[in-house]
Image (cartoon, rainbow, N blue to C red; front, side):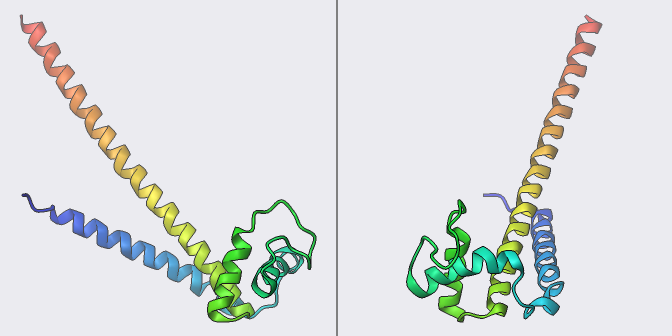
Length: 141
């Protein structure tokens, strides 16, 4: 069994630091707005629909006009309110957590892309080197 290269631990630590900094930035940049009242689109659709799920268990909203949005976000908010209680700050923190999860997921996808691109480039360089050697040997014959 071989040991993992030291660079792997370093890159994992760097990834975790970048992800933590990204999450910290998302939360820190919104701290001043945690108790700002809901915006019109929140009050018009998402909060009333989430309150219908939270208070009455109604998946099709009655306190607002139903629309084509699936109830995933509204159910998420209702679940957060079950744990933390209904408040503007809890709602904002829940949505920031969702945004941070999306940002970290994007970072993960990007890092996978970078690793795959480097692997393809390395494979291309190895193949080009092999072709160059084959041409040299056939030119000598």
